[in-house]
Picture (tube, rainbow, N blue to C red):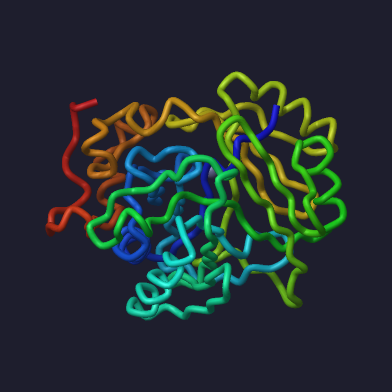
Length: 318
Ligand code: ZN
């Protein structure tokens, strides 16, 4: 029983539209769900990924409107590692990111950059062990170069030795080398790369990662709760996130982990062809829709190629 690679990574943005413009417009992801933070329903929670929002393809953003820039430090993820199909794809992305005004640092095997809020991005060439690519169809990105999903994350652990011990112990990762931990599930591989933290304070703010979620089959949550407890962690109970069910805990280095089920997925409350186009609310917030919509800024989806707001009126269509 191993974690089946990344499920999603959740970051914080101070400007949801800017996050969409970059991640959909430049990186070529599909916006697959426009909803609110279930714990703070006047804030957007946006999900982007491949065409269906498959586990492993998903980057999500909590919008904290106008949030000051954060600074990754000890206990935080500092970079999201995306797969691309080939080394030639790295050249294409170097050009595309430069044209979008982003800094690019390229070596043979990797390209590093950042989103407009400073969220760290690393592109690596996919290995067959990673499992099938999970890519969106984007008008601006050829399929041969499309991002194939999230390979893993780099994190600044507060306690690198403890992080490596717990992940390679109870959590089933293999320590391939110092600072490189790999989980191999039934379908996918996921990387957890442990970097030494920089000096100075960590600041959770715009352009930083909030947590990283790993995939596990729907019926394994009880086992994962037991394993996390045996490893000295403090997992939550199973929480229903509408599109998946999750437990949360912190790894010893301070990074928040989530273990999320693959299902039921994003088509549970809207048609697969229309994912992300309308504001979806979980049932407990539907009666507050008017008040919630009033507090949210309408969004425009560059992929739709129109000026139509994402927030169409969907009352009565659930
Ligand atoms: Zn999450």
